[in-house]
Image 1 (cartoon, helix red, strand yellow):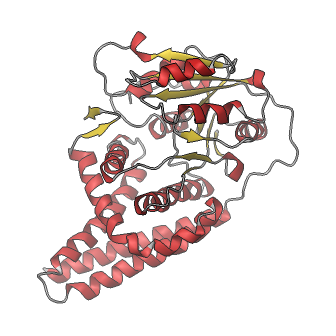
Image 2 (cartoon, rainbow, N blue to C red; image 1 turned 45 degrees about the horizontal axis):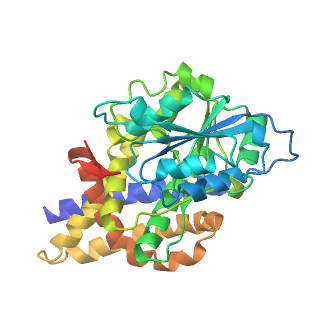
Length: 381
């Protein structure tokens, strides 16, 4: 029985290693986007920011957007206040005096009673009031670079997409949890980029996402996925991909990176990851589900093996080799990814964070399927 378990985990581990090696190969093949020449700005962007109790960060976010190296008559910002109990709305109103294109919508004016997908509803309501041809979503705790919209405009003009995903990373809080989140998150971003290089758009992040308003309405907005609390980015992307399979793009540029803040404590971190995991079964493309299942089974097998090794003699050598395999292939993948995000020095801590990564993957995956979680002060099913 013990040998069967070890052989099973070894087989899963080898499949996982092959997958990561392929991701590394694809990531290295992806070329950074660099316009040969800048065309006159053309796209009008409507930036939608759903915000709930974001008084500590909303001003910095909006000021960074206001300072864009892009014509002010070609973008607007719509903040949707999602029933905030702090001064989020008041701070937005203060900035409106010096920010002509800044608008504020109160979600409470449109939504009564409890729903499960407040963010999706906020985006739909804001989209109905936009003036632009392109919807851009980001979060209230994000900061953008000066050429964010300029690069997005150039990419759209030269590639003719209907949806553009772009990179996101966490700011470095210099804490163990903060560094752990950076390394974990850039691995997801690296996989996103690698999949694009392989000709397969599998993931994106709503903190840095743009899509044609026409395409958004053609696919029925969030209809059919509005029962899922999460997924305003990836589930929407897969809806758009079905109808426009060859018009998805990835803006692989350092100038397009959006930076967001990591979770401040382990409870918030687990709730965020459970939220992300909760949409796994909603993906229409089953290949994504099978990849997620492979990752989960390998980590679950390692965790069971590490615990069983306390009681079963001879378990640790095999599990140790598999753990070493996981560390090596993931480190090889993260070297070029960390270089793109300029966080190479953090890789020194990566091997020591493996136990935490294994535990969180198993716990978040399980609770994402069978549990509930708290998000923005709400209990979500």
